[in-house]
Image (cartoon, rainbow, N blue to C red):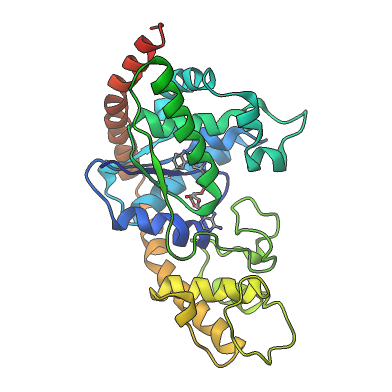
Length: 320
Ligand code: TYM
């Protein structure tokens, strides 16, 4: 069974990406899996081309450092021709209403928004369907997009003929939605303006400790002790979830006498969880040749794998 997922280089990778997605990609891997840096997705809002190139490289290094086998990696734009063609086919079975209903478009889309912000979930469907992926391991925020990919696969298959596997999303048992440490009403995000609430994968240990020490725990009345109450105390619940994900236990099993103790434990758990990834990324970035080789090999394999499905889809649709 093929599993496929990706990360967008719209900023530096953070602990939410790691706990909710990246670390699972390496763990339950099979030889047919494919993981990539979705650089085309980072173009839907104003961006700097040199920064995009640098972040794409950094995130490719992160995926290698996470322990994903190099032969399962690639960069999305190396398949831009194949994906462009398939995106068009899928846009022509997707309604405007379906695309406009996506939460991320509703949050950021206005008349001045780039058209790509509206259509990128269709590009994401193309990513998944081109490779025939059966499972898509993601955090909670991508569920709606995978649902769209399912709908488009079914619709194309029933309208023009069976060609696409209908994929299903797989979310992790804990940390599917890590929140911002200083604003727990928001998810932890790469593109945040205030980095105080985001623990980046490449943050040095002391910075991680400072960020966790300043995390919001919701209430000055701590008489209830450290309790896992996601609705009433989302900040504290977030810290408990982060700890639980690092320790490999359920949030309800986490017990600490005080918020101070909880915060020190979260900080140390995160430092140790992220340390090997940070150190390996630094080594990889110092050896540009290795990343170039991984990228070139991955591009060729992913293109070959998708070619047959793309030509069948074009033929069934009466073109190509
Ligand atoms: P992206 O780059 O926003 O996120 C990468 C992965 O990290 C997960 N994630 C989180 N998990 C827990 N807590 C958080 N705060 C958090 N923030 C992010 C995301 O759910 C995701 O799994 N459009 C996608 C990339 C993409 C893709 C694909 C994914 C492109 N093509 C095909 C799957 C299949 C994105 O921008 O993810």
